[in-house]
Image (cartoon, rainbow, N blue to C red; front, side, top):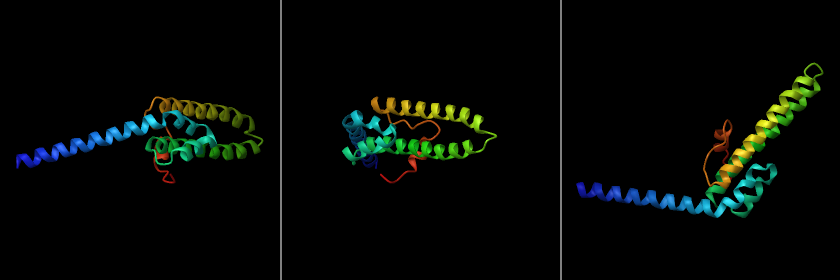
Length: 133
């Protein structure tokens, strides 16, 4: 009984080690281009270059989420600026929203270059729900 448990434990630890080795290899192969995922439409470049790399897929999902939020904000901003009463306020709010988008891009680029699997603050969970790639 104890021998079976010991064998199961060894198999599990070997599987974990293999998964970790695979993940590290995935990162080292993709660090050079994964950062492009956070530069708007350039998110397609890493996907086209290394479509099967898990590190690329992770950062591409995060980059697509950021891009979708940016596009959504463009539409919201357009409608806010049409209304004469809040036009000035919309401009001020828009400035801070775009600064936030730039900050998220920088965070994503730094994470990709450093080989980290960190989600973007605020919108990172949305990136996990993207199953296109």
